[in-house]
Length: 422
Image 1 (cartoon, helix red, strand yellow):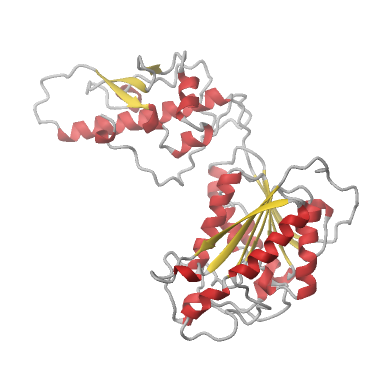
Image 2: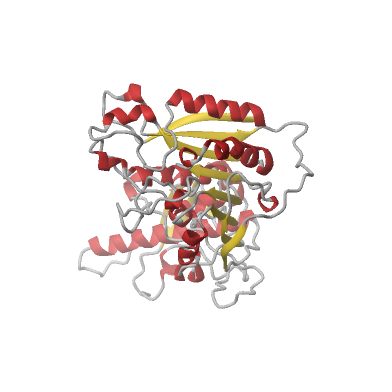
């Protein structure tokens, strides 16, 4: 799912040699902003990638195929998505794929913080118009800025493979909106020299609705890259169709075999640690972790503000942390969908105490300065007295009750301020 009209992430504006119309990665690279029109922030290509990443978060596919992956920019963008177990990039140009072997390999952080389930990234050389039995039943297929590079015979054959043979639950297709081109003052022709066509919104919708009706999909249309105020009638710079497969009585996989014509160019298998705790135990672990973080922050803040006179020793204070505040943390949200599920998991737990109305966790904050060695003294949420249930297994990969925390540090959400919940 490589975006042919985007500059490389590391070298914006660098051009590629032109080649086959189906090879998105080897087409001439142009950025819409080079035409002197609207300026997009973030850049349009990043908006496209972020939109796809948001859809992956929404649909949570385990297996995803990215057609036209080329330089692998979107592959790299999607690698952190934790729902994925198989991420496959397919492009017609084997040499381009061979040159990006390095980007699919695990990073050092992938070994320090292993994923909770198996994960493999693969690169295949093949045509979007040709069926390969290995990719039947994938959950999601993406074609970002690809179809406008296809010659008519390939474009005509593409739906039969993607929608008829592979039958993914979700297909995402983006393409330039030709109506938006009037906003580029130095523009003539197509946005990219390799484009075979550029469709208006009506032309794209006609094609997409025909495909959806033929292969039993629902389709919705969206825009990416909003233009300046007053140009809403032109639509967005990029148009996107999201296809969702209907469940039908005859929705069984075809017994027709097409073989495996695609060639595997490179593959990377990531290390992982299987999560063996129940969902309730995972939720409890996350709650304990974030309570300690919140209470430690509060204790340290009060230590900075208190007077130099340390003669008086403050008594322990009970603090209530609302459940909806805890649900703001990304790590907890990954294992717990809502406040009601959080409440159900904590009711009856001997590790965490709920308020009488069951809307908050009650903790005891100890201001005793006699022990400065550990953070456990700042609140009454124990983790070391859990009979081994939540023992740290960093040095024991075979630990039966291993739990790999889901918050891997990518969250930008800060710890809540006291005024938000007191």
